[in-house]
Length: 494
Image (cartoon, rainbow, N blue to C red; front, side, top):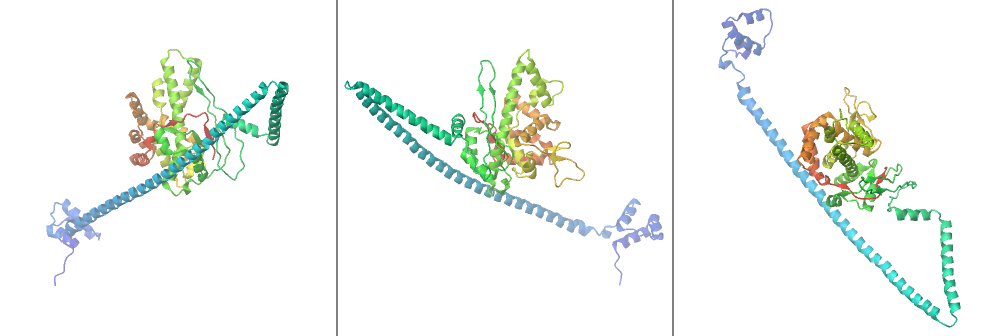
């Protein structure tokens, strides 16, 4: 029976027929050549390998097409699973939005009932006033009748005078006894008249002393308005999330109202509640995060706009005062402008759209629940190599960066805006923003997200995530929002 030759043996036979010396030398040295090496040497010597020698026919014509088909099937399967995930995600979002709308309906209904009750209670003072007017008129007529009597007129006058003296003495004695028993009540009443009432959440800790300074607003002809912002500063209370939610309810802080009126209450938190992640309702967790961060972003933007207006006024003048020159030098240093270029300063001194700031804060802090946000008030995940920071747990050993730590949340917001307005990595961001200004267009967050590829190592993937966060949570609604006009701005230290 004839032995079936292997592909390698056929190649060796072919080399022997054509007397390929290179292969014969290897065989003499007892070096085993592979089939691929034999093929290479034969082709190098211009020897054609017969087609019936090819053993790769199965691999090229059968195995490879089957492998390609299996890859296409796998790709199709992944695409189908992704589509199914998107559908389930939309259903979940629809469910959450429906629950939120139902909850808002009942809240509005409850508020309407409360307003009706207040209207009824307001009727009582009106009734009391009417009754007191009637009684006063009756007594006046009675005393006038007594006074006009000719008989014993002097005694009537003495009786009336005595009545009022007795009433006055009783009032003075009552007020003195009340003040003696509660000496702090008078100060509290004066405080309520001067300042708006602030309902404090019920906590187990002792009520701290609250230092409240009045906000002073003075309008002087041909001069700018100077506003002294005063805060009600509370010590570190470590408020729980439920307490914060109750506070928002007490002051009627609702995002739907903010979207409608385009104003937000100036309530500034210095840090996030430690148990924010315990909120099971994802939508409620996101809304709580936005309520805490939005006033901080809007406040910083309004401060930048005030500086921008002042810069415009100074630029329009031919002569500047010493005070204005000092202010300009400070701003050149703050925005890292070289050679005193006014155009460069104007380009850098501008707002960061609220939609971008909220989206980046949500992405970098995990909606306020990350370790960096809770331990170091680091909302935007800024890196540092020299300053005080928090070391990442999963940091690459070759890297030595830390996440920059801040004393309060507003300091993190200010540092973030200064970073985007000064760092060389965000030149395209500032240039596109400046183009919008020159074309008298509103600064649009969605149009600027693509310029922030350098903010994260993932580049374009990072900007796509920002766009998705902005659209899903309707953050563009907050771009025109301004601080509500208020004589007092509150700062709460959790």
